[in-house]
Length: 607
Image (tube, rainbow, N blue to C red; front, side, top):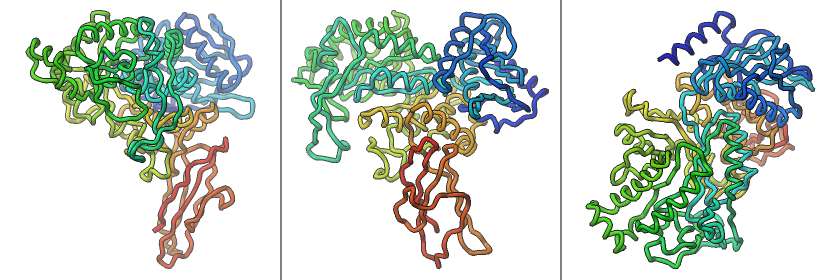
């Protein structure tokens, strides 16, 4: 309540000095409150950053990093008050964590908050900067902002395809600009183990590599066709620590995922004694759910505790994710050891054996000051006492867990699986795992299910999008699948539902962000334009308006169904369709951005 009253007081203060023009502040995610005034502040070679406290000085360093990256220069950092300055103030802030106040006048900029809040204020400031020639300016504005959810995450799967440290850092930079604060790093799976564990060197010598990988979709060829190329890789502990620090500097916590008891074939290829005697094992190059799982014996728990002990020295995060999803129980049903453990512990079945397995791991993590996260399958057989549930099979698991008093992170495959295709016609898109997840479906998701009471909704910690990489093997494709959907995710996590509006997002704010990330060398999918077709009564024809969602883009089009390239008509404004005498036509168009990036070919029926 105190938090809300404080924010309300700030808003009341702001409204006495500014005329409200919220829609003109094109920041993603949309701030809780923003007012644009008259005038601008000019950033030039004489502008300084004032940062007195150590936390503020760290943020100042990050501000200069992003300035250098985007505009090619840095500002001097002072610890004493000066004029013509961007003042970062973390000393007197009484704002809640991650909240900030940003005030721009014609004389300077003041950002108030704790370290995280000031960092996010800087990110908003960076989005507000306008460049004309060599001059940078910021509009006079007053913003008071706070996140809707404490957990705003993105999951990166590097188990199926390995991505090097530089690509991970590139994604972290974009995450920081969008105020996403958690990277869930999926480090192990059937097809590869990606983290150096010094006590078990065969994990990186054997488990990190596969001899070959299937081409095409899972069902395209029967039997599978393999590419014949060795694939894999891993992060040394030093590299992983470097990524953790890089993320922390950007207010992002990295949560590692070490899969168990399923998705463990790669481990068993190196240490077959941890399996259920169904080997020989090999790191597979095909996808799907594999029957090979850990046995529930003492050597397995010793191995996992040893691994987690090293993991915990690398990752200071509060949470450790242990997977727990897609665990076929066939091997346990025929395993004498598994059945013996079920009998000795008076367990009902193999589902309860899985809960028993995970409960042991949770006790170990809790003893070491860590909390466990698992996918919603950990509910099967009874949820362990302190676990947080990540709900992916729709919302049902999250709803059940919240009703039982457990914390939940909503990540339903219906809205948050960004490995799904971005167009209904899969032939117009790169190969995807299946499904269809357009930008608006991501954006319009509400992580607080209406099936929960207001008290139960308090257990919803936040939201996460998942980037699985079975069919994503290159950096360009990774970024293409992530963006712009991760931009929509940012607003789902930060902006209150009542303040969200998809049309406002897509037409006013998304174009600015897409233009910015393209300038910084990040690939993305150019979204379909907003095509409006209306009746033109005087002519009895159709009036066609095409609005692209990337700022300053060009649109080339045809209306006879033929191929589109830069040799056809360039869109210059609304136009009338031909006289069709009732026959349908097809509008085809492409979008070309200011950086000469070309979209897929899109089509719309003119009826």
